[in-house]
Length: 132
Length: 199
Image (cartoon, rainbow over all chains, first blue to last red; front, side):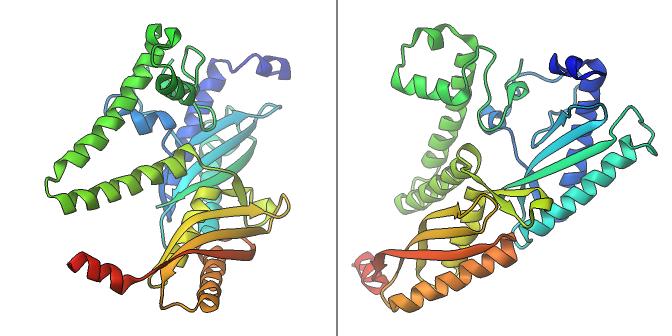
């Protein structure tokens, strides 16, 4: 995949990979000790009980995690926004989340993993948005 | 496109190009704005805002008893303000740990930890709390306004709050704070207040 293509947007495979990456990262982050919840999207705060549209795959939308492809193939950046549970040190939780998410992505998408269509390098940026 | 698809940063754009905050502001300032009136996306967003509004009213109506209602309203206000602070206006992001950590915390979340630390002291109520970086990678300084009971000698009060905030920065958050400025904006006479309530 060339840089030019990337500028025009993601193709179907990349979009699928992005969705899988976001879901994998969200599951790993949510399961990390000290994480209260992943930040809901702004829409979720006012949406009420009825979603605007059920996604085609029937899966609930991942919020609080965004995966962005880098400038080269196999390069991805994850931005995770989460709330830390009170009684846990925010920095320690963030470090644990990075470790857990990186491991989960490696297991699923790394060279050893079952799904080898490409995450070679992963950058994980974590922002604590609340202490709950 | 659903609302969440366009979620970018803090303020998602609707398919019509307007962001949620623009829709809300326009609805308040110019209720008969032609775009808003004719745009299904804006109308839908406003309907959702209505849900939040209904929730607020419903919760307020629930308690008939006046005192209970006041307490419920306070809790509700606190909760709504909490949402506003943490989700709608997160403020700046501040670095956590070392630059290699690529870890951040919103100013609102850090301020919440510092307010809670100060309020762990008896009769101390924290108000405005700003956390500002001296240089881009820190350290930060904390500026906090508090109200406190009359029994506190002011220098001791300021010192105790400083200690608490510095401890919270290290133990609860994990960020470096180089200074804490405390302004006492009000003194509370707890006994007199209690007397008034009884009377």
